[in-house]
Length: 348
Image 1 (spheres, rainbow, N blue to C red):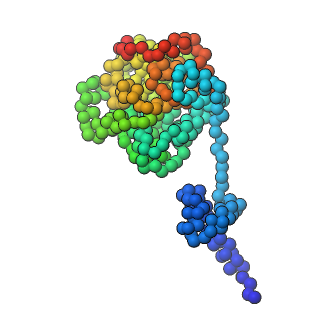
Image 2 (image 1 turned 120 degrees about the vertical axis):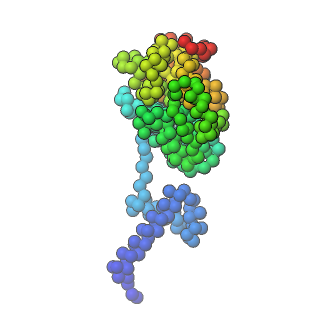
Image 3 (image 1 turned 45 degrees about the horizontal axis):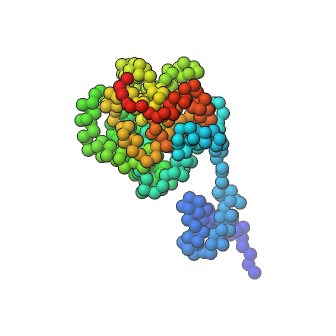
């Protein structure tokens, strides 16, 4: 009986390794079942299973579990009940702001992935928080989904938080169609806005606002940080540079504490300075209220007042935040006053 030479044995092992790698790719990457792989390669599903086990044992496949944020379900339920939310999820993170953002964004990404289903039309705004959420969204390929950019952009925003880039990245991660909004977030006056929104590309995206099944928004912070006194570090609207000094002064005098998709509101949930909204190329408040599910993501105790005001608008259905922010929302003086709901909107 002729025995195999060392060269032949090495070649045989290489072929077996190549086959195990190929099978593992079909199983883990292409997500084919063992039966489907067996039919494709002309082998039994039992052999497919052995090859998958071989790939793991030989280190051809490495499975890693990413640490996910622990949740505080007790405080989440308290927020849900107090503000009438469909869902509140609260990440347990350390005091470090970066860790708080990462933990909250990771939790939000998992929840968004669970809530979004075939055929959904998802609107997304802007900001560093949403950019972090999108970075963590699990990849899928669902061409029945559509992602719509619901706020214009600014050349002063960094590429990682620009709304066009954020919406495009979400579409790529979901394997979805993408509807960009080729316009600045705020223009000089209502007449300029009226001319812009008549342009076919822009008008087509704005028309898609009425098709949204889900809107994913951040909560901007317009009031100074209550702990440090720093001037609104948590507002993409201010960081974008789209507002003139007179606009900022009007927000201050109107008592604006935060914004939803460039629309400022006060601590009682009233939208203020409507003249700004008339210059905004973004989803308007009425259209945002019609979206069946609005998911807001915000983190950090400093955003407590802004989150509380946002909840008081009555627009948000799902809030994803961290424990420090949730505690600030529940414990801050005057929190009871916002529970009566939003007041009539006016230019204050």
